[in-house]
Image (cartoon, rainbow, N blue to C red; front, side, top):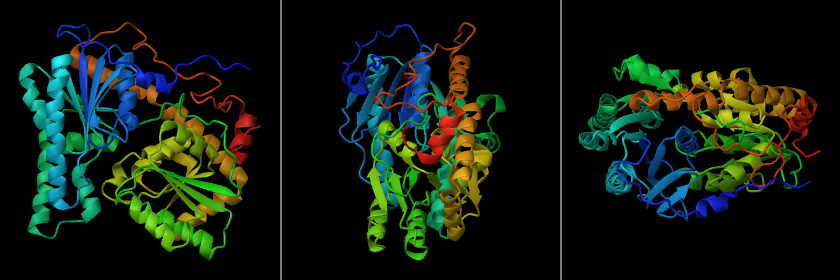
Length: 464
């Protein structure tokens, strides 16, 4: 069989930048600001970029550089401007230095973008809640401001440090609340990732409900879908974690659960792969070595889309160790929906928004109960029919109720209403989508229309 010709990712990355545009070039131009992650590694922001491009908007992004990233890049119709990230923050002084440095680098690059491609809207994706000031400064040029709220920073503070018990901590929390309040105040429109965030924007942020739109971080299930893994399947069972490894993410629980499974329950047939990076990665590696689990736990570091597809397609159970905290309870966990996209059953602590995402396709346990978490993993591993039923149910739910495409329409609608753009019936034109049989790496997709084969794949996680 001949694989249809397709443009490689490498070729798209090597494409030269388009010529600079004149100030009156056609089409509204959106400048997206991200400090937390590089783009396109930030999958939500990259989906937003692609949705805007497909709708006829011009898009530029300012973000920190990832390893080996060029300072400027034109990728799939999006201009990327990147700065060297700040040193790792430690303590209050470190965070102030990081935020100040990143803000100044972003402000300087916004001048570069303006000279080359006059933008009409700035979208800031938090954390942190500091870019309202930059948007306010650009307002004199007629630039409007969209706040895409990815995190609740006051809740993040409370989740990491608890209720403040000193004057300094109370001042820090008050400062975060003031920054959030100013961001809400200056924004022309607010985008919330779920209904919990939307209620906070309306109640705490005092925003008109008409100006707050929910755009969930659902996966594009045409792209995020199971492939037949190309590597040899590891003997036994494979657990997987995908996401950031910070103090609030609960990733250390996976190490403790693996210690329980391997050393206390004697399950030598279980292996865990952790995809991602974060402040706790070095400590997690050290803890793994101390417990003698180097053969049972693998850390991949930063994971691209190809690596995610390979590992999530080959795994048996996804892990959601996020504890019930003021932030996590009302936040949408992207990992949960991404597991679902790959027909992967998962175990999670019982959080409000995780239940909204996972429905009845996830096994929930009380927050912090490590033994119950390990118990539910073993229930899934030792019951192939249950594992299969939940995996198939997860895939059907995510594609029917949580897919990115309707979210993209809501997202573009925010900009259409803000800019006064109109489009013919049918909305934005469809962007590029994957080959129906193979992905960009030539791996064959599992046929999701063949129920018998999908069930067989979920049970065995192997090719035919």
